[in-house]
Length: 256
Image (cartoon, rainbow, N blue to C red):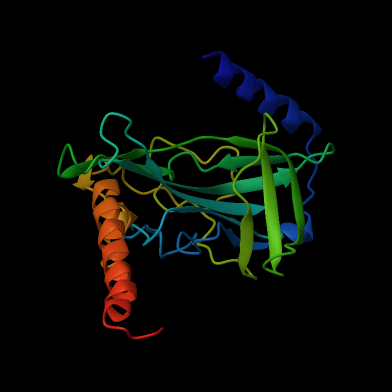
């Protein structure tokens, strides 16, 4: 509770000092190195109100030059009691952003549009699908050319200055869904976000959707788990074969 109170206070203070400033070096679609989790229609289908599972986990942010943003998260959650059964979570939001006078970024989502899908494939055939709404403050950011990949790189730092996973520029201009409210309700407004969409009849979310398959299950032929005992026996067999290849010719008087 204290953490959320601190975050709310940080947002309020940042909002007081905010100016209509949108640095151009942030414009574009950025994604972590897998390049498979991206904002836009490949992640969220607003017409059918569904989140679409990427082939790999990752994070993506998109920013426009006139103050709109979109974000997509797809993460695996470890299961210490059963490491072979991780859970998965997908989150999507969009709304408006601004940089304040201290250089921090304030991201304000359209509350009724955010979506979250939480899945535990080993414990159930369905995922839990709900609305999601979380304002964000990024304490700072850096954009520079990555020395290894030689492409633009974005480093975002959370409100507590903890670094997020680095992201790399994928599209410029950004790949995004429409910036107006996509699924408004009659009882909700888009306060704090730029939207002129007409309100439609309230539509409840389908609380459950098919469980996420998780990216490990999609890559057939790629080994994601190594059996240590099997690896030991394989190594022993290779040593035996090597010994036969070396000693066999010597016994027969053949010089190697």
